[in-house]
Length: 631
Image (cartoon, rainbow, N blue to C red):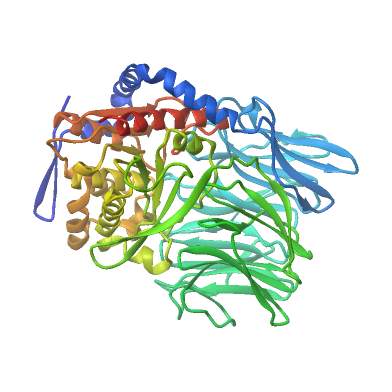
């Protein structure tokens, strides 16, 4: 069914045959039919999917318990028991063990937004999303009686913090932008506005520092920030707002610590000389120490700076690994906790003595040996070299005989931390290789890596991914499929049309594909505050480069590989009409497309429960492996 709509801008006409799919009511029956069609098309893979899911579930601990952390007088932790999807938030003291929040009681779909315990351990502020639209209802639980207050605050978002008996939180506007910070007084029930962000390009976050001295609000777009320190509900700007300048803050007992790209594009800590080749991502303050989270040469590390001038580094203990601070709520502490792991090594939690640098292993997830991660580098057409993390079973050679799934994203300076995954291990056991390309647009090689893959340089993301695939196919793997989600779905859609000959199959999850039309519609969530990432097509030069790669405006034809597309009716990040329109247009050109759409509760990343998500991954991997094993 087509109802052509003509878009005219900058002297160019674009005919959109499927614009009617923007209407949720008009397209609903089509999406329901699509889900039935999808279920029918994949019915023959049911035994294989069940086999994969069983392996995945068998490698998932029946009971999973996190490392614990201290907050005030209690020790807190999370746990998922046998057969549970979402798990519990718990605490213990003096031999008692108490469940504070059981997420499985909320139904088949739940995502947790904020989970903040008050400084006196009396109250829990928590928020839940039960549909997948990423809009949360904020609630307050009295932990002495385990009862919730009658008040439920709608349309809240991620981040929040306690200060002086008040809970500070963010509220979204009509396009899901967190634009207000408000605060609620537990004692009186008073709810009042603290700060409103009038510039639609900026989003607000709020948090309390672990020092207990500051409540900080940050307004941010893609390359500009402003921070406010709030005292008695009154925000005062820390450093103002200057276009193209970012800064962030944490606090000691003596005042604020700031890191910024002002004068150093890869960020510097104010008062600390920057080191070349490093991108500073975060600074966490503790009594007498600052812990810097940074990247150097494509690898993450921590640097500990003592107030006495001492300094040392902490690196992941395994190749191609990750490292990050986790669960550190106390400022007055001698030790901090950090987490490590990789695609081939389990997650480990360590205690780090800040004064001596001594490390102690606190907890390790179950280990499954026989897998290896390594990094190779692919030359890009312009001479840059692209890092590729390759993961395989040790008995699967990288010599051109095994097939491969290549993953890519490449946006927002985001870096995917490598995490051991039961689903991935089941895929690898089929004799396939997994590769993750750190293409430009992401942050694997720092801030400049992102700058080289955004705005008018966005096409570099796509050519980097193609270069990575060609490098793998040059004697390292036999066949290759490709996968990505959201902005990574855009990447898959672009390379699907640019080089269809490379791929045995393509998986584009919730793909951002109608680039020009979406970025012209400021009633869609994420449009206005995404102009600094993709461009503003109201400007002729931006329109030109965006139109050149927008997958919906460049529908390919001819011999195309099998394609699996996903979408969700409740997804606020990529509205479901985008993948639906693209699928319809591709089918008109004869493409073989499967469309897996969530028509009930479900969000941007698919089913959230641990077993439900494994079933989802089994579907994706069954599709990929079926294509890779064809001769």
